[in-house]
Image (cartoon, rainbow, N blue to C red; front, side):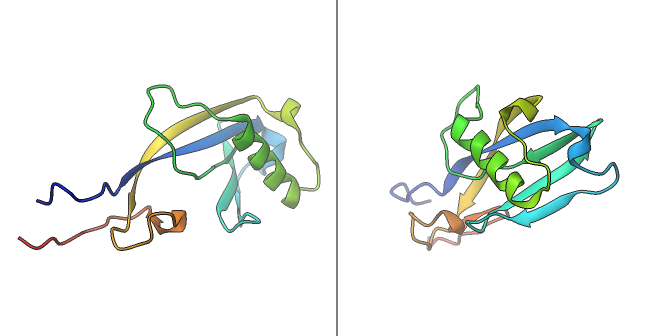
Length: 126
């Protein structure tokens, strides 16, 4: 409809850590805001605990990987709210996936908080 329009689709890599089951109760999870205002969680899953997720713009790749920076961020944020500190030796495994995110076409392109997890409908003039 508008060939010169800037792209509003962004790949959103999300990294997750698999931790021992004792890091979360069997029937409840924990969700909190990180120091910089993002959301992080600990959830029981298949006899383990999942911690995640990071949230920053990335690039499309066939093999997304959790970076050391993302792993350290998740550990650091978990250690802010847990009594028992953990380090990289606590991690059983980790993975990273890509989710399609939409930027509000009317928002500042450098504002990553304008990235939506909801549907965005943009109406263009004919």
